[in-house]
Amino acid sequence: MHRKRPLDDLFSERSRKFELSGIRKMFDLVRPGAIDMTLGEPDFNPPKNVRRALRHAVEEGHNKYGPTAGIPQLRQALAERLRRWDKNVAPEQVLITIGASEALFLAAATFYDIDDEVLIPDPGFVVYAPHVRYCRAHAKPYDLLQERGFRPDHEQLKSLVTPKTKAIVVNSPANPTGGVLAKEDVMAINDLAVDHDLVIISDEVYDEVVYEGEHHSFLGREATTVVVNSFSKTYATTGWRLGYLVADPVIIDRIVGLHHSIVACPPSLTQHAAVEALTGEQDSVRRMHEVFRKRRDLILEPLNAMPGVRCPAPAGAFYAFPQFGFDLTSQQFAMEMVKDGVIAVPGAFFGRNGEHHLRFSYATSRERILTGMERMAGTVERLQKTVPMRKDWTH
Ligand SMILES: Cc1ncc(COP(=O)(O)O)c(C=O)c1O
Image (cartoon, rainbow, N blue to C red; front, side, top):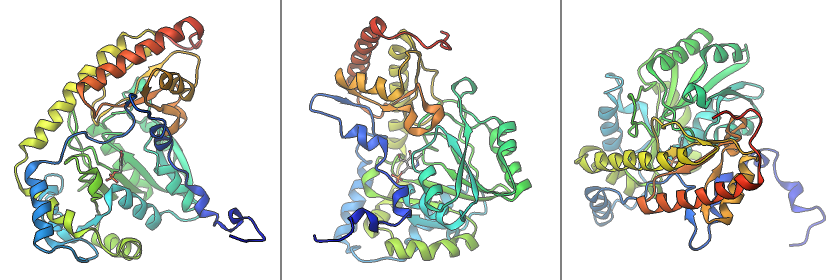
């Protein structure tokens, strides 16, 4: 390549808003023999009937482009499933996407304008803030703190709203905290959105993975809402890249053009298998989620037994998000653990309030969880000898 100007000069301002997420960077540190607890991905296979349906889809010739918004059978099956939240949902309100990832981007690009303000959870899933920046809007973080069960403070939310606020992003059950919104939170956020004409973007990809209380969807309430969901976590099909968003048909009509310009249509094969996932037996899905509950209990005990570490039981999803008292940043702590062969994600990657936390995905085997915790206990023992506790740490 021969250029007068460095290639870097040519990149658009927008392209600079994205960096490979910190989680991926930690994942890249995984060496043979290390216990990787970084990725939020079930270690199970998709249910047997769903795998079979995928093979059939290939043989039956569903190897071509399909409808832009998704195949009608899947939109119909999803509408039926979603009627537990909103009995009036119609298939026209459902847009099939390339994972929740695409759905979140579409929602952001459709609503956020230059200089709009968007309330995002802190700590929160890693793509929300870059999406806001990409649209040249401003992210305003709201707090999710361990001492409040990682639920938002309603007064703080109100105080963050200004005439420029366009949207609020919510995620329950939450990544990375495992927090679950109570019904009163959902109602308060809905009311706030109605009062100030905000759009709610509700990421509900862990809706089936709840251990305490129950999931309360934002679907079917009064506010203008885009609900984002996915097959990835519920059916252990992260690699199939299939998600969806649900919104008013007028919103779908607006979004679908952008969706078409990026992906043309969602993958035909996995959509056919997803119809089986929704309409076939659900026992294996329930069993999988019961296993997550056991693993949650398994990881909590050793974590809380470590001096200088505190981890209340997460109410949903499959992440433990302990806080530690050592006077280290979360990245430094994570790097100390790398030396002992266990990889977790530094909490600071998810926002300011994530500092002094680590995220462990326990969507991995019992043995790996136990070995990971043993190794982390070794790290803690070593740190105890060399690193003081922070002054504000009480345990
Ligand atoms: C909160 C949250 N939203 C969205 C996604 C993206 O999921 P998908 O695989 O459907 O793109 C993830 C994946 O980790 C997630 O944790």
